[in-house]
Amino acid sequence: MSDRMEPNDGQTARQTALDFRTASRGSLPHPLLLGQRGFTFIEIMVVVAILAILAALVVPRIMGRTDDAKRTAAKVQIRNLEGALQLYKLDNGVYPTTEQGLKALVEKPSVGVVPKKWKLGGYIPNLPEDPWGNPYKYVSPAPVQQGQYGQIKGDYEITSFGTDGESGGEGVNADITNWNLDKD
Image 1: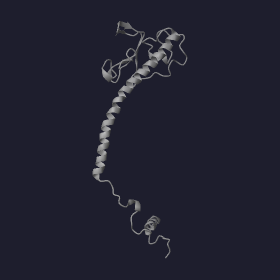
Image 2: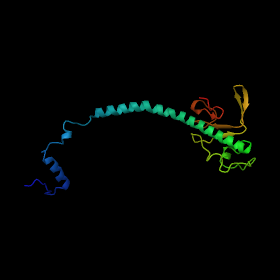
Image 3: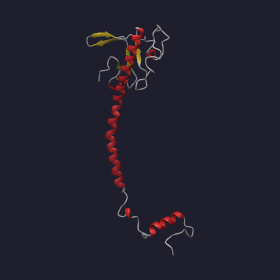
Image 4: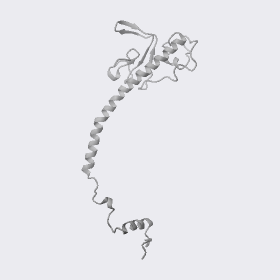
């Protein structure tokens, strides 16, 4: 008899290969598997419970920060819009009217007083929505505001209505305007 094992009586090549591997060791299992056993149901449940506790501690911290991040993003966008409005005024001598809106930073206005020195290509590539998917509200001239030293009136007001998308509110629902960017 030769050391080479060949398929016989309908054995497949795979079965023959398995027989060849175990033939030299007899019927003993693979040496790396000796003395090992699988995890019990209790051990698996303990691991699942630990993962659930970790998720319960970590997820609220991460989720609570998304509102802060969105409010910060809205403030940055408002500051960028303010910069574009300053460039618009430098070129045209006035800010866009409420009727022209922030769209005047992207497209040459066709309503109201049409600016003669409007920059070809616009002042920003596109008009962003606030982080909650709502358009920014633009009013020019700005409504009268109660300031630290009395009533003040600005040239314009840019507003994001926050999480709820409605005027007013507190906390995450509070409006963000170019007048209160340093608040919070």
